[in-house]
Image 1 (cartoon, rainbow, N blue to C red):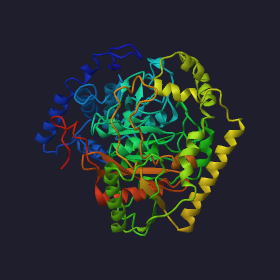
Image 2: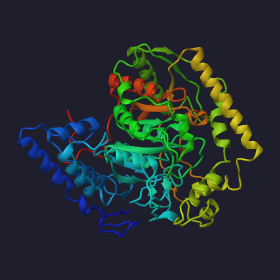
Image 3: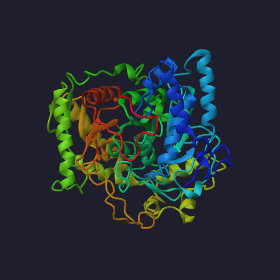
Image 4: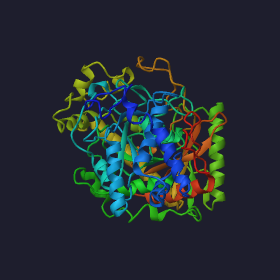
Length: 544
């Protein structure tokens, strides 16, 4: 795979992509050496945070241009070379130019906003006016919608640089696509990165950008976050606008942060949350957001909290007798002990009536996709495909994804069976609310996956039924079925070096509480570890 550059035609991939980044490692190292020579403390790119970057700008240790070049160097070194993660679909050909403008603005009047020069990795399900949006499919290669999604507008207004669009499971499922191939997990490139925001997960974990954006219909933020030792927040459905994003199931689609720290997730959420008239469902969020999600973070935020542990597997394929289940369980047990140590009252276990119906309820909802996809494409007169049927008839969609999409063609939300899905959702929603109320709980906690991420099947690009055990032990469906927020945080690595995610679920619009709890857990444990396949380049070492 190759990428867009300033020298390439719009929407085309160019094998000379790295020319703007080819000397970036040298430039970045030189800038760090110069900073050290002038008496300033060296800035370290690896595992850095928004606060650290902004402090380096203020101290004169770093410019926006140097930061962008540093990330471009890492993309060049590791995305198609090295472990060949295949996490990046398009690089912003104007990233250096935007960085230069931000440096000029900073010199004149200081930061342009809370995301000043924050390089963002954006899932390629989300439109940008200046880069193609492909949805992971060869059918949309080079497609330019000519508009920014609402969250892109908000991030840019806050000062961010959309550094790159990330690869995604084709039309928002799994980790492969006809437009790019296979995304690989930087902790073990033979294993899958979860999906469908696998490119955002792999890219954020490998330090290809400062933060990332994913989309979560049934788990596509929290799954990649869990298997990449990241923080991933699936917001309450009405909190973040989906305008400018290809839908899957609108009743559960949402966008959210994927970051290396909880604080960065809170900063990013502050920028993207809130009412948008272009997505009327966000009106439900009016008056339900705090002044700042960041202000509520507290390293002692678990003290006095009440948390219920869900032990019941939500996936019928979970095998409690397997070795990898026991490895995951050991880390979850340690996390529960840490929650107690950090001041929480933990009820272990708690039972949620009807929990075994969460997965079946999610899977039964095949009624929304075609209507929503066709309505979305109708807004894009230049789109190369005009309907879901046309997409399938083109015969180029990855076989597994095509098989899944065939099951939704001809379905409609006016069907009687859709009412049964809505009723099942409401029963489970009430059951969760009752458990939270009866036990006075701030959150429920469980493993995002009860098993490790699995090996990539050799025929995953050609077989409509690949035997790869994808998403084995999946506990992600509860949140999208009931529409409540869930936050995945790193719980550590198994004996063979694979990340495990701990998921916290709260009531509607409980993002501030979840972030507070997650932050206290993070600060009290520091479980995140970067992947071994993408080490620091010269001059980019982690801060001590």
